[in-house]
Image (cartoon, rainbow, N blue to C red; front, side):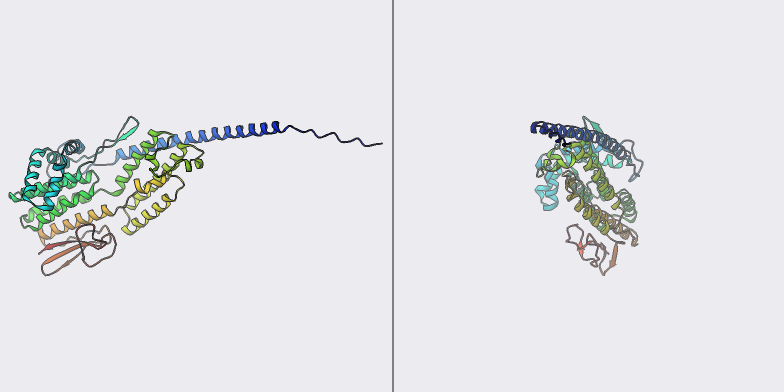
Length: 418
């Protein structure tokens, strides 16, 4: 019996195959887009809830502190600070630069201009002092029009030098104690605004007043108590970093799924990395939020660690974020993460001033921790008491250095005449 030939193969037209493949691709693309959209919405909602928790954490931060002296008035220091800052912004360039120019030159012409500025804008100093006298310095963090409204922090450098000039003029009139109180109040103002760098002019003038011999033991001991209060409430780097991150989170939420140069930096192209996140701007933002908040938390914890550990951690975090595939996260080292070298340095200066005040008041040598090392050092010479911190290098140079923080790695030094 003859075998039957196999049935002929049925061939599909190429156009049908191509159409079927295209349909599968479109279905796959649609499913992937739907899945990415669902994941994106879920993570976006989680990020917003987490951000709200961080905002409440920032609002709940205890900003109550003891009064520097006397019975404190009721109210929030920021109500007064806002008045001072608003008036500082009205100063002409010639007025705002006058205190700095006088302190550098000491010329009569510059002094005359400073006196006019102080007379015309005495309300700046008055408002700063009222704010510093209050025990509540809580920030009013308001969510307005889709953005976080943070009180303005402008003008601390101008106010610091205005206060130094006025304190010096008060000293010339025999009112040295009044000048000292003004300087301490202005230090608290700079600390409340997280501008610790603007405490240094006051520290220098306080040191001059301590060594002038115009303050008696009781006045020096009172100064020591006030400086101790400033020390206990001294702002940490982590406070500012945390608040800046909360503000950045509000920008994430306000801008939605769009990726702007404000988020990734002017030199970055977010389109190059968007494919990693399913071409979803929201997924890119939620990823950056998670990575950055973890870095911020670790940085805040480092404030309590020894200086060398804190410095090394910042270097590691910077390297990790700089190598991130997320262009938003890569901006964190420049926009958020910062060294606590300045905070530790100015805290060291404050403690050296404390030691000087105690020594001139009682002859005792106060032992205090060194923010850069174990404890602050001291040595008596024939004509002076040397007090110093090992500084950012973390190495004791035996009291070789200067009081400023730009001493090229040497000690932070304060000398007190015997």
